[in-house]
Amino acid sequence: MRSSSTDSDPARQASATRSSAAPADASSEPTKDARKGRPTPKRREAEAARKARVKPALTKREQFKRDREMAKRDRGLGKGERDRRRQGIERGDEKYMMKRDQGPVRKFVRDYVDSRRLFAEFFLPVILLILVLGFVRPLAVLSTMLMMATMFLVIFDLVTLRFRLKRELRRRFPDDESRNTLYACSRATQLRRLRIPKPTVKPGDVV
Image 1: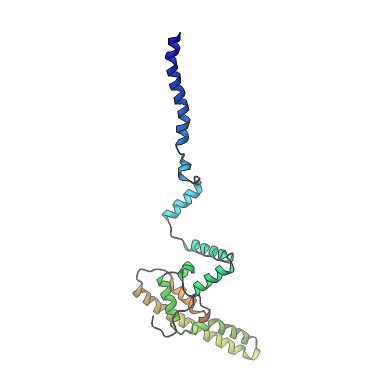
Image 2: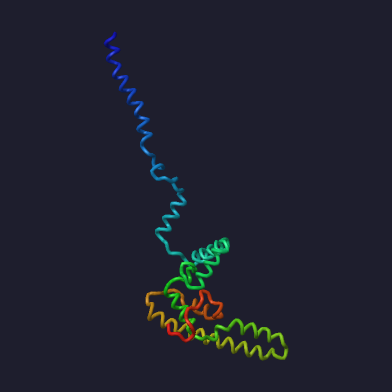
């Protein structure tokens, strides 16, 4: 009896040793989440991240939505941060600009427009003056004639600008296919002192 109990003791001890070591080994092995250091992302988030990696370019609608969200975010910033952003845009720092104003092509378009004296720059003030004159009965006919003349001059200005700008863009940036002429016409119809980003060249400068 003594010998049989003695023979079974090593087996029980080995079994107890294995059972006590198993939890320690399991606890010592780091889990998948512990190795990652962050929770597993949801399937929807993972799919959105995958799509962003596959197609990083934004469509025009997505870019417009992004710019609008940036504008809302700017309104939520503190006064100091808004002032820094506004000053950065005015001096031409692309870090603070919207996507539509960034890049060497858009910089050239702005300089090309700003280096020319255009009647289209005064389009809005002249139109407002003509509308005021239209309320004066003796000057109603004159205001109509001025309206027609103004429209003709502005259209001639913008068509000439568009033709020359397209020719210059094809020569300097042959691989660019963005709609820069619309961007140029929009800037050309703004008063020079109200243009954002601020002009960096003077009328008559060679660009």
